[in-house]
Length: 336
Image (cartoon, rainbow, N blue to C red; front, side, top):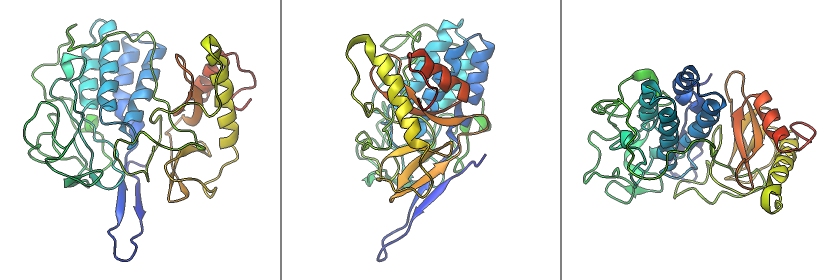
């Protein structure tokens, strides 16, 4: 696997080159998923893991990574407060996110649901500009100081799990430390608010390749997603009302997969959109698809949402994609 993907946008008339700093995001939840499987989490383990690592992309909002970590902790609490799962969730909450412009990524400005995540925020990659955040925001501006803190992070780019500073571009925090940097990792049932229910896993739903990205929270639109699920968007085809949306979701996912099957790396595209190209996740940068492998044993596919109308684009196994589409009642496999 390629641990670091860099995309440079050529300078124009002396303008600075803007470099994207990315990672193999599926590696961020591998240890958590293994702990979840060992604890008896069943199919929810992969569902939560896939939904979670998608929040490390540039497009999702600044609190979606924390929300995903909350979901990871929620599931751990249903499995006898599994300590390993909680520890790995705490580390995941601090994993650096992709930066579309080699600038620091803004911090969430709200409290987590679970007390185990209090005071945690993501590290930055070493290649991220420590004085400027995505959107050109200078340190001290909105989103540049983690929730609950009154002064900028010092040293810049550090986090509780790696207090010495930022981590190497493309690396995984969970490979560098097993210590989340909080005073004790024993799980409790106390939360700071919200619910603990994880009987249904909510996966982020991305923008289909024909759509436009609207929920980038001030981030550069040249990167919408890099490898897995991205931010919310409705299905390309209106769905039926009531419970019938499940079948419509399955059929819409098939239509997207059929469309993706016709794409190549040289297919024209609109900046800020994403798709699957030759089994890899693809984002449109400057009118050209930039692809990143999903990883061993995984494919990129459009999947139906479970609890609402829409679809998601994610890295998953072929068998999981087929099963999810078939579960909606749609016939004809991935492409209909």
